[in-house]
Image 1 (cartoon, helix red, strand yellow):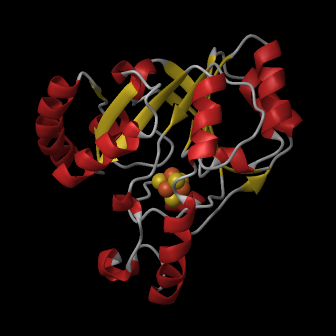
Image 2 (cartoon, helix red, strand yellow):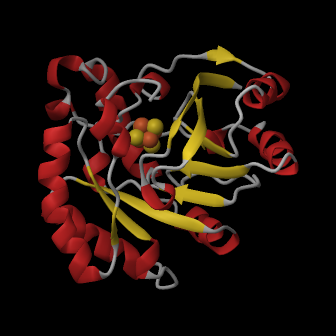
Length: 239
Ligand code: SF4
């Protein structure tokens, strides 16, 4: 499987905030969010091919119970089934971070699902100085991204069969209305599983947006997720 990076850090988002974890980041994604904070796994995928055994050896050298498999979209990678089975056998706690559009019978202690709202769709107006890709490539992804970003049957299977959390990336007040509409489709989701987190890649924007998101969260009984890695290290790769 193609691995963009493997590193030891702390979980910066959601229920396991602050827990020391090893991150295994697969490269490749079926979506192209305009705000993707790991474009080296989506717009310009990078990484080396590594076998399940090689990854297990690297993880064995790091004394860390929690393993977070992230991406890109890790659920695209079939070898994840055998990797997660073996990690479970070795006693690791496994989090899978997914957008919830692809299904795979993996083992996971926590399925961390980040459904992509309409605010994620790439268009060339947001492609400032071509940071996403060329206008032609961005244009080719607009409809494709929108068609793939919501797969209710996958979400339904994941929240039925795993312990889970839902993390929504929020840019403005309209996004909150969209979260409310999204949740109507899944009445089985309790408020305590819903995390809102600000769309931001620098500390100042993160704090400013998180302040008004906190008020929304209070009124709905949801949760505010910080992005601790952004607060501590900024948008730095491998942290
Ligand atoms: S789903 Fe995640 S990895 Fe894929 S483009 Fe969106 S933010 Fe990036």
